[in-house]
Amino acid sequence: MFSKEKFIHAFLSESNWDFRETALSLFRYQAKENMIYREFVDTLHINPDKITRLEDIPFLPIEFFKQHPVKTGNFLPEVVFTSSGTTQTIVSKHFVEQLSIYKKSFTRCFNQFLGEPEEYIIIALLPSYTERDSSSLVYMMNELIQASKHPLSGFAELNETTAKKIEQLDNEAKMANRRLLLAGVSFALLHLCEHHRLNLAQSVILETGGMKGRRKEITREELHAKLQDKLAPSGIISEYGMTELLSQAYTLNGGTSFFTPPQMKVLVRDINDPFCILPKLKNGALNIIDLANISSCAFLATADIGKIHPDDSFEVLGRLDNSDLRGCNLMYY
Image (cartoon, rainbow, N blue to C red; front, side, top):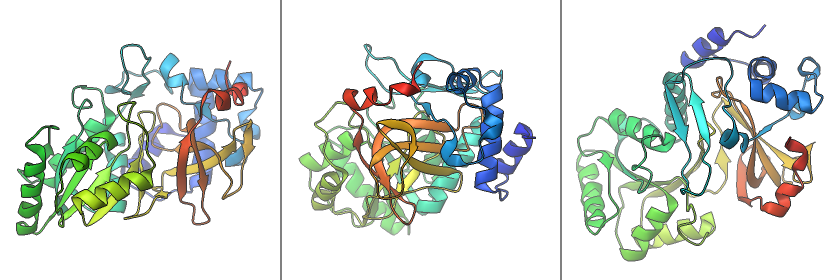
């Protein structure tokens, strides 16, 4: 029988677990204790006790986070993270029971792919995000900034003095035997490199995605090429995360494929048959298992299109449009 308390203890203490068995146990638990997910599973006439493969788990479309409180159990959340959006859009809400789980999750992910925060002076370039007190990205970056234990780490505004400040911090990082980590949303980093030419030889750029309709979408390869040409960093890494997830995947330096931490797994579904899981190298829509989502839903069907490579990394190729979503209408009720 699944024990929420034992799982949380194991997660926070970084105990070893068998991913498949843990995910299946968590699925049965959430299919019972999460009202929204239970209704979704029941509507599909699925008996959770008969599910023995990860590929057969029903994945909840992330759109449900916009319409319903996706909560496993009855609790008062420590925080409710919300997605960015305009006044005309409905935002996603992620009810987080314990911030310690989120902090442990993103710290583990950061350490695995970037190292310890104390290796860096961390500057976060997140215009519009910092104007909200409910952004999971801002919370994560603020915690990492504090963990860097350097007085020059912090948030930066996107203004005329930003470029000069960043170049100065690159020099400061070298003298402090650190590297500068410039973490920013895509549209802010693109604005910076279109208006300035810098030499950030001591810097690593961490782009977190997020054009959010502010700029014409470009490919990740195009963005990285522009950043490398105009800012000349020592490395460029991309982060894959979203409000509905408490874990993040990262690319390796210079790569475009994302690698997942131990608590996260990605599968690819057929866009015309959401219950058909595709083999590696086949393009489809991404399903994500995130064991950190213990108090919401760990099994999410995203609107991203991608594929999985033989080394289990995954690539994001685009987004489902309205016509694609119609092909997934079996997922809605």
